[in-house]
Length: 71
Image 1 (tube, rainbow, N blue to C red):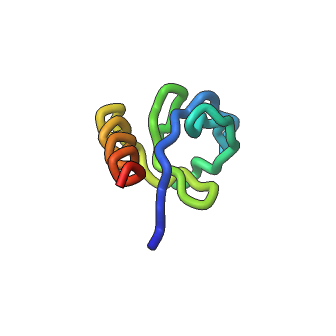
Image 2 (cartoon, rainbow, N blue to C red):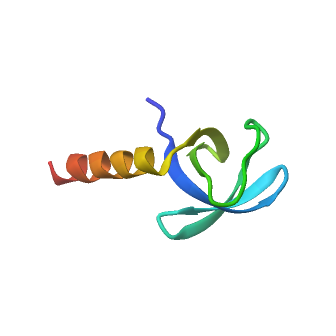
């Protein structure tokens, strides 16, 4: 099973971006995606941003994780 974690893009230094993952800053590759800019949300898998997602999708993913962790 593979997991991708939602992150907010803080700054771009192509082909890398600094993202916020739950408050922790990490550097990830963004060259698999087009038109990534600060403020965007992406799904990160093993150091690569693999998909852009909306803020609403991020909230839903976080809600589902919280629900799973309570069980």
